[in-house]
Length: 316
Image 1 (cartoon, rainbow, N blue to C red):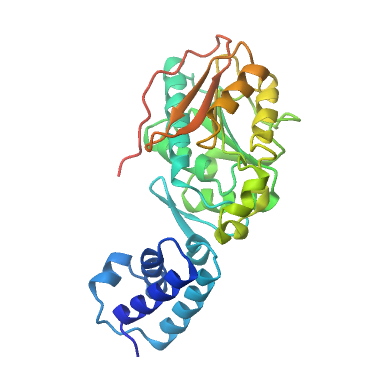
Image 2: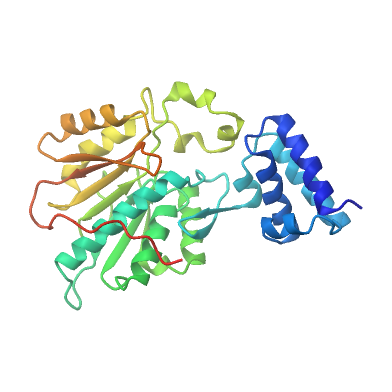
């Protein structure tokens, strides 16, 4: 019967040989998942024995990781914005860089409802999460806004072209206790108009933005995720340009749209916004690594005041 330390060492060697970029971390996460402990507890008790059943499960998990399957799919969970979200092959695994999109969309929503408070019985301020996938953005926003006291005055629509992804998003919303704040729709971007009770004042979109030709260069893990959630066409911006073209028919005047982009797409994204929406101010926000990450465009109307609050993270 091997010890935890022996199992970790063997798995790390195997994953390193397979080309996994973080073999030790992957092994710790997978072993912790199998034995029901945090990875730090696994590391802290290297002499503890690994039972036969746990050994067999760990072996199966390591074999899947050797084949390139992402750790998040094997564990069926991904930490995002302080939440443990269920993930599987129905949707893209949430990335840390998308947390900036949540920060910005949440702060813009807070600023809008503070600038014009809702009266009792009035239609809530509407937020639209386009391409919701696992529901990560909508769920994180709903949790944060409810904790900040805005649960009664906002409502989020989460849409995706994939029915399978929507089913996963619903599961995450229910698990995180915010399903009552989110409406789910199967839709291809914005048109025909989604069935909602008001025009959205904030739209957040994490659409596929990887260029088709680059998909084959991103390593084996990408092959396990749905291509529909990754392939952005020739230059990665096909869906972004479509979304920009549909915004005038959907976004509330004075509203804000925030779109995640690739770190090498700043110039092309700004040019696309200028071509589709020449009168709309456009800004690019950088992530913690200093890389271009979110394109923000503003409807030039005047129904909403320009949001001015800084992004606010949820309490730890």
